[in-house]
Length: 380
Image (tube, rainbow, N blue to C red; front, side, top):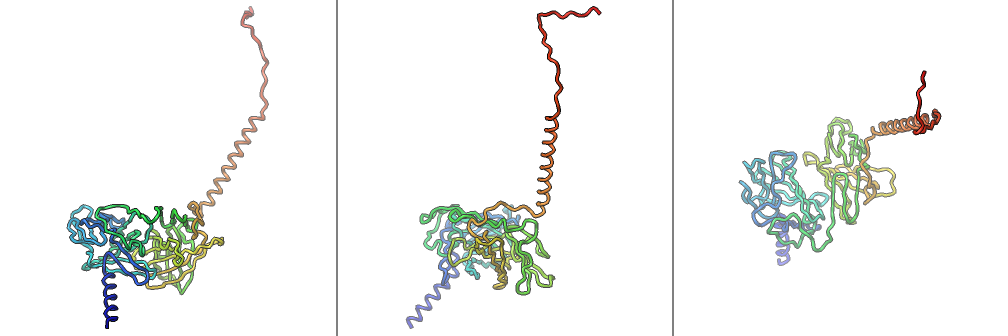
């Protein structure tokens, strides 16, 4: 009976932790602890962020602790019109739920009435916490992203709350280093750079086009957008074998990197959420410095809305391909013609120079005049 009570207490404690907006406990991964990010002074840690997709609104977020802003009371997330006339509470701290996807990536979700806010936790070693409001994906559903050390498993398990607003939190236990990332490159001052810019096409076509797998055609282009069928300006596209149906499975502008800490059992990857956020493409990066050409393997739809591919390339290695952005393919013709025209022009200049140099010069007699000798004019 005593053992049963202990089991019930443990299960109940885990359930409470799972619904805590500050702390999430996973049975195998450990803790996510956002306590040190949130402010306790009634103000939002991330105030008035304006997404490019919703220029008429700004969004504020404070992890763990409620805040007040304009008409939002005891809020976790607040939406405000840019003219500050109206504001709406989108989430409260007591409505939080935690979930993890197949890649063990946690998401903090708030449900407040008919509104749902999903905040993706993105593990980052940078000492500066970053927040992005993506806006309203569809009616009453809002998406946001948080980059932080505290978004890593066991990243801030022993943190203490902040009482003042700060933009950086130095870590006494680690050496400060810099991280830069875009849809093309990931640079870490500790390890080097992964640069995929030489793999992607910039001419609007996918480098890996119509890779057939499991009754579908799949296309993917690193770094740069491409268009194919009904997929417009995308990173990845899925097309049925009749080519009647196609839809995007990921966008370049939403790209972020995961598993970049050189952990042996985790594969570095780029994640591309789609425009509707109900599909997401994950491209695992397989380093192979011996390859002379890049290879893409499609692992298909591993779960509803989750698509996985593997890119094997020397450019998937740290400092494997630090190269400038490639020129479009149709520039090759113009470059060759320009070089040829330049060579012809130089040859023409040399010929003209030699022609003038070889022309004999006319010789004139030398006449010496003594200024003291008068010059007499002839009488005739």
